[in-house]
Length: 52
Image (cartoon, rainbow, N blue to C red; front, side):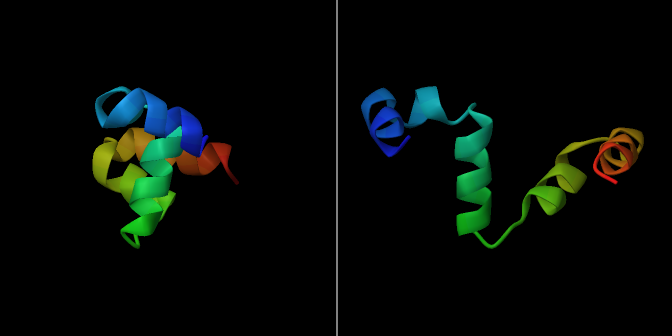
């Protein structure tokens, strides 16, 4: 994956979920916290229900 992201560059990679997860975790922000900040309250609750 590193080779892919290096080859494609930042602009092409920033929409890829795995890349976004990596960046968030590097910034000490877990996926749940990121999703909580970027989803509506009801969508976040639905996500939590799916992962229960």
